[in-house]
Image (cartoon, rainbow, N blue to C red):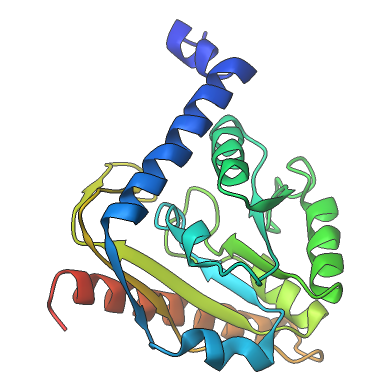
Length: 232
């Protein structure tokens, strides 16, 4: 049986309060920190590729809403579990449009609304809006799932790996090493090498592109932490 705190945390009122608090806290971190873009001309560089698919790692993505410029139309995929509800409320408070469901194509894809979410992401990209989502399989950190490369194949849009880091942070001891960014930090927002998946990619090719997403996102993440920790 769930403990009382867990049960309370699943109520809509508690989730709304936590989501609103999280959004306010993230604004504080952004407003008191100085973020470096790498490459510096990233907005101009990606313009010809819009709309695009933005890939991030679980637990490393909390500052992502702030890198969107006013003219950019972006929707974010957020899962349908209790933590996802809090994330969704925080994202809405930060002006982000949402798609609810799973981007993974594993055993729980149907139960988590994955089919509907996948279809909505395709329609969103076809309408000219970009999509942001975490690339790793739930509960398996730093291993990219197939969903994101399937989305790239079906939509014809490129995947851009994005990593954000801050010099001051607290890392939780959980499956995705969730990183709580702290105020008054040096920050880095990194865009790595894009991955382009052709429409005729078969299962073998999809696996190669999946690994490429994984490698490029790991490289972007390493670069972000090297910059904020002044190691590169």
